[in-house]
Image 1 (cartoon, one colour):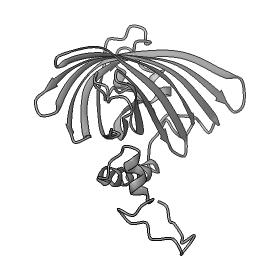
Image 2: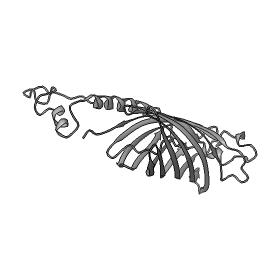
Image 3: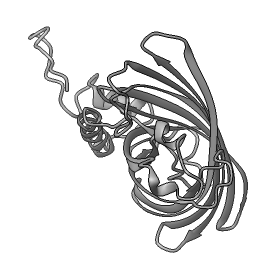
Length: 277
């Protein structure tokens, strides 16, 4: 993390309760004198930073969210593990048997969320590794809340860059291939609040992709494809910490004559930090 030197040894030690120290400054700015949440936040960020070193970039097709918003001024940070699209193989799917190719892959990504308004959240997902990088920005707007039931729309887009070594076991025959994938996404989420800070959500989702392949620095090839699916997830929360477990199915709609779907699974662990008033 950080280390601080003794820049001026004539100053008084910065201890809790001393005038002018950072505990007092934070208190005056409305964060209160209980510093435990901030200690937890620093610990969490350290854990997330270490996890980032092993993050797997990929094209995720998860929801891992509810129709509830986290509240204006609230920050959230977490890590998700889910299935993702193995793009070159996805384009080779046989409509009669989609399992003939290995077109789904495990994906890990980090997520940061911010409450723009009480009914609007912004979310950034990203992943990095030696052969690929990707990022996605999602905006959620809660459109209704009645008692324990809520509904929200989610829209967003992202970009993925990868080379021929990322989407294995795709056969590249020694060629140098550079991929760029542009993504648009839409979701509709229905959530019901359960007892004991629990939530169950049902979601409809869809993606549109534009893939550009550049092989051995020659002319590029552009391909469009799309897919959609259904998800159901369960969320359990405790003092800002929460976990989500998700199941569902995804259909390769751009495959002519498709008649099968992929089972889908994912989970997320996250923490919401609310600013004290």
